[in-house]
Length: 190
Image: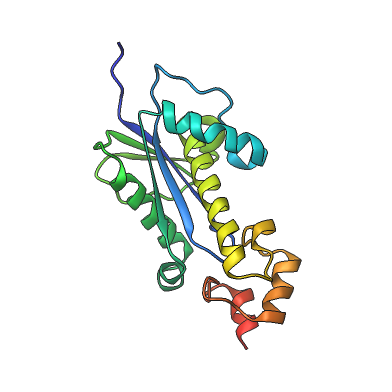
């Protein structure tokens, strides 16, 4: 049996929303258990992402999620909070990585070499798998937050700055899960 090289793909979901955490995933794929259909989570239907999650969880050599909370996003800024969430995902893996492949052009500080790849979720299956796990985890959480903070439409737009969301911010004011450092939320606080 071929030995597994401990290379993780890492991606984040939730840099653009006005509410909720940023969620990341780190995935080490097993070359002996390929998963077909992996690509950028945004290019897949919600149904297809939900179908792929149990396959990734079962067939990956290892995977882990990381996150940064709204308070950390407001304190650090969204980029630094995203990098922190990536570090947390890697720290949650049961193995020390030999290399990390990160979607985008910013790299978290890790104890291994890191390669950033713009649109890496389209070219690297492990990054695509991370994209899918992070997206599904965050979307599921936004469904729960929609129940806790009704009126904003979080189940529909997942916290992104839609016209409906921005109008709800004006009408209702920000909730505790809104990112106060983001301009549309700050404007609604006045």
